[in-house]
Image 1 (cartoon, one colour):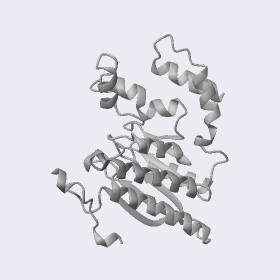
Image 2 (cartoon, helix red, strand yellow; image 1 turned 180 degrees about the vertical axis):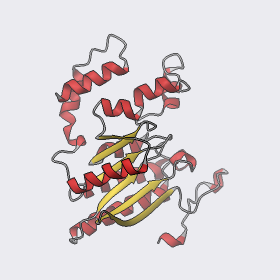
Image 3 (tube, one colour; image 1 turned 120 degrees about the vertical axis):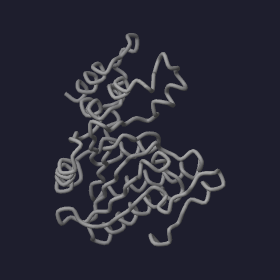
Image 4 (cartoon, rainbow, N blue to C red; image 1 turned 45 degrees about the vertical axis):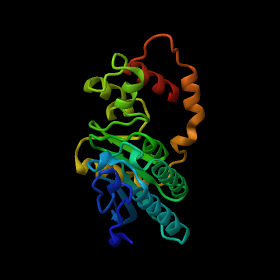
Length: 248
């Protein structure tokens, strides 16, 4: 249970100090009278990386919320995503945990919204960026970043001349919250303000399950990518135009 203070058994043997909650905090309550379960990733612990324990906590919370719905208790979910993805020290265990999170999100979103929020400087990357794409609704802020691979990973593979991870304006122009919203890859853009974020999340909870989830619109995105001319160097404005044109 939550008071057992289960910690990752893998970190200490690698010289990493574990944490009692493994960087994931789960709570259940109400938002404007609507039952919700909230799972928050602590970005300051190991970069918000997902390991066996933290991943199991989030997946388990979502699975129980889905079970509540099947038992007549309409329970939505809010996930606060500040994560670099899988925890490298836990390798396949972290990957398996993220896969379980994905499956639980797809199950739960049949009944009630699964709302993702990316609001901090860590951003949302790796396998958890796929989780973000599975959300019923996704909210970002100016500070947020969203992408499959993090800047340092891309720099390592492509070279600093192609992708300089230290160039903050460049990085945010490609993966920042404002760019992702303008490219129609997320549903909401909020000020770095608790009241603003809460208002948008509350509105989606009342709105309920969307008619179509973003992950179900893959044909639209495939057509969009197929129309891309890869010859010229693409820039942030071109990306916005590409995605906006696909949805017009």
